[in-house]
Length: 335
Image (cartoon, rainbow, N blue to C red; front, side, top):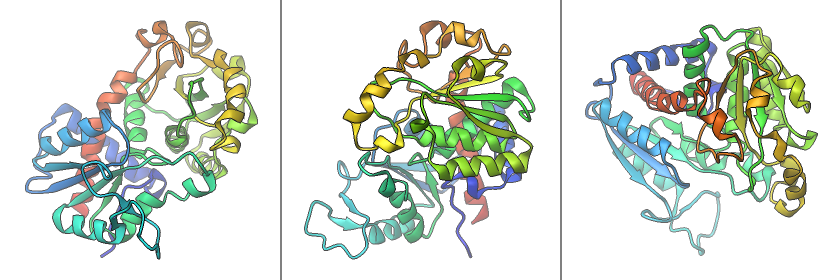
């Protein structure tokens, strides 16, 4: 029997995504369940977390299961992911053993592993999560690597709660300034889910260097074609914001400068005006604003925007709990 994983929403059909969102909405109305009764979940964090860890731990508990949290390299052995490696360095055990042993203990394995920010041609292969999926004999869930599919679902649920049918709604995914280069995961995922929902998506970024990886742009174009929406790139702030129903902000690093921070920094510093503020939101169609969090106030978005009634970032954050329960229940139910 083929094991079903939740690594990216691109592997799940629109009908399957809709079913997950419906189940998440049901969990939001009635949180308790027994779908994970007697089951265990291994949560592996190679990078820090607050919302992800909290929502997965509590979600597992609310469905009757038990979660074990591990931080490889800290409270668990460092793991080797390359095949054929002579392991005479810092790593103590190979993913081939780790994934199979955890599969004997746990019913689900969830992994959070950010890219190294050194070489995008390497990081875009997403080797850590794919290695877990290759060797595990239980379902694997992506808690954020170079995509963030759980955040996608939480975002989509929040938008549906406030806008209803999302088809043909204008959606702006805007780059914002941040003093450090950040993962493209949430931006990739926002593009995927908004186009999968049939929205008219504008990717707003300062220069062509900030356009996302062509793989995700192509997925976005395919999703838009299949679901009746559209996708375009803009570098014009006023044009992009005009008439928008949703503005979603995120900072991400320019791929041509991946691992070359000193070269990217001057470009980034020249575009601090991409901050989301009241003047830009006034151009929208009484649009909603959201962000995946954490957010640096008055860097990515102003206090006024974050505290406005149209900011639904807290709703989106809450929805992480509900959508992840839906994903875990679905994967357990298919075994």
